[in-house]
Length: 305
Image (cartoon, rainbow, N blue to C red):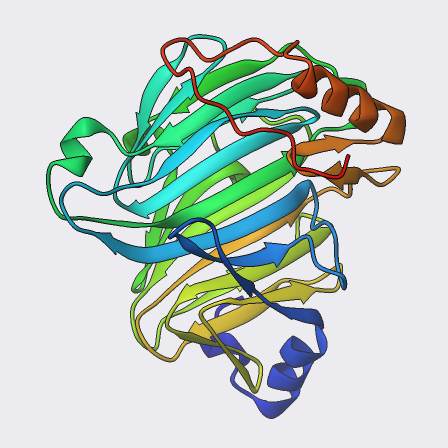
């Protein structure tokens, strides 16, 4: 189904009726980097395996400045930092050191526990730079929560691309439209980056139970409703949903199979067990996580625990 196939009023009403919930990102200042935090929300905690969704930037840094996210721990999740602009240097306790660049995927599985830092590299700090992207956490299925930590890097050119009629889709992770990303996932996943020309159209595929559309930039329409940057539209299960770009726009579509049993989240930890969260707190407080080679700083456990 294309947007042009669905311009009749009845079809537009059906598209609008597929909307279950709209969440507006909450603005947060993370030490000079402003983010729109969309998930978790009081109204919705997960969409498929997606349990955390931050949209950061666009931000500008003059020469000599950058970001410094000191080493910090994770359990029970996988992280994906996906950039539209700029560069971030990833380092972790497994010894991996990898720059994150626009369009590439750095997939870090925390499992039973990992520590990483994200900083601007020396070359980035030496010049005026910008930074714009998404920070995502995926909850792991219960049988994989304590898996061995791991890291994989996938350059932009290795990801499937679908182009048609002013729309360019990059499959970041999971499956969609008959394509499968090379990124190894732990449960059925949908994660698409979509660039849209003005007046172009696309559809949210119907082969995943939970689905959402997030507007990175521009204005898009679903039925007779319009949405702009910072808004996430969550859809009801079933049926492909057409949407159109009223201007040049960038959106991501995300979702997948529901994570069974619910999840607890505290700080950087995710688990199906509250007791496991307490153990992770104690392990970080008492220095039992492995360090990040070459990065001796760390973020202390938040107070009051």
